[in-house]
Image (cartoon, rainbow, N blue to C red; front, side, top):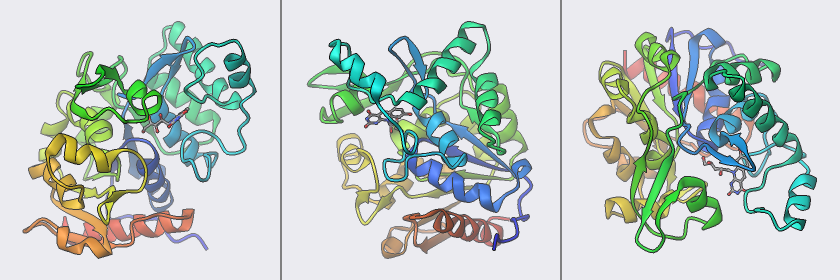
Length: 315
Ligand code: FO1
């Protein structure tokens, strides 16, 4: 039976990157009606590939909320085929980024609409409606704002080159964002209307920081209750390169505490894996629970726990 939706907050905004953020959003979307939840999604990972505009995090969130995402990989579509990729590789063209055949339809539709002069916000809304995603998914910015990873061994690498082409092997020295730091009007408006902000368990350096670095976002958050969920469990990242990035960028071992310290005084409460309860920063309310989010019910269970906890401790 579907549990009743949560009504303690009028307007929850969740800041999200790809896979971890998308899973929690999936749970939150079951706990909150569409007029009570807005996702602001990182677009720093976006890039042009095969002449197409690819938005990995927006697509991961959109496919996940549509119930279409790949069950184990997290990104891409379930039951995807890769015939176009095989052909591209046969021609010796760049085949390091795995775009599936159906996924290509999304990138083509988006690229055509961008060429027609639509904004990324408008296009994302159209794509979400077509996939029956009812909760608003907002790109953090309409103009490109690409993330670069500065490395000693390979110089400055565009994010997907670093993550996928080089398998995140070159140690990052710094993370940089280029392009105008202008949030979409809708994202800023959502933050101004919010009564709770959730920082989902995404990578703080390359998924959440790009959002926090936009004009007006940190200022808006300072006036709001902010709850962050750790993407590090028992010193390891569930997915992605974060556990190696923390020592490289912050000179400390990977831990939930290192993530919370990175966000600093923006946070009003934290949630983390039960075994990591000793990592709750002193003076902050902390929820120690199971944060792994296996199936969809587990995601909803965590979402309700987080909202109950926030209602009790942050209002
Ligand atoms: N990640 C990979 O590690 N390898 C890939 O070939 C790959 C393809 C891909 C295609 C579409 C998409 O939406 C995401 C894709 N991702 C791939 C994931 C993506 O690079 C990262 O997970 C995100 O940018 C990080 O949040």
